[in-house]
Image 1 (cartoon, one colour):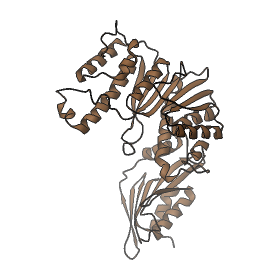
Image 2: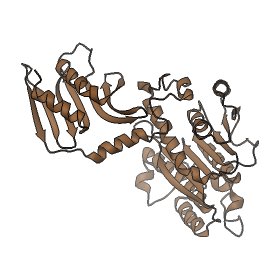
Image 3: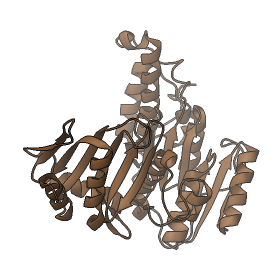
Image 4: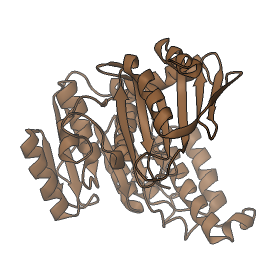
Length: 398
């Protein structure tokens, strides 16, 4: 005979009211069941599902279940593995508790979730550039997806990072030329997750004519990437061994990407991008030592006297200088969060889109005041010394 709590849970699932369910407090500790299971609605390419997220001590796994089977699945887990659960629904928060004899009590409280929260979850899933459920060949080869399109539990962070990057790229695609093939350069490409992702988005999904060059100092990594590009049939994706500052094979490029180029290597990449007339620049800086040695200010002594605080402040000042200098040259600049801070402290992305405006004297004066206040002499300023809106370059610090 079906109990009342089972009827209520089934109704919530069947009528699409569930925003999130959390099952916890194991009935037994034999290690067979996950200590916690979270259930939430997701929209996949093959339709609406409820995703069961099993949290073990050393891993997280996922299972997508059709709505007409999910209610029975939840009830089965509660009867066999868990002693309590909290279900956030559109109408109420339902707390389910089992006593030592196995009798269930279902408590109802005012809802703390919302329909909007559920919609956002659906949209996050649906709007991912590379969605789960359909395998992207490069992600399979790089060990992020299985052949049937499931994302490996240990690669969820990398999967989200790739999609976040592609979302940022998609936002600025209208700023790239549409009447001719595109040239894209990825400086310091490393294992090239994002390089392959760019090619997949533009050449495979959107069928655009492109040429992408990945550049890195590590010969073994470049060899691996080129072999993979050849295996995938990505004939317009080439990988080269080389240093950013010394690369002179191009005279123009439409988009320049630089991910974690160390210290002034980021400045070298930005300078190349500007001189090539790049329409879009996507740069994630890495370690930033140059201005740490330069920054001075009696007013900011409470910050600058502490090594850790000074390091963080110098990094922010470095990117502020870079962004402002790009704005001087007519780029529209945004500082965006690339990945969540708990994944890596290097989580800032500089996205610059060329606006077509001429060099701004007002922005240059703003930059000069900033530079003088902190006693800075950034490399990017010197690398682009001929472009600043001044009568002479005598005021550019040596």
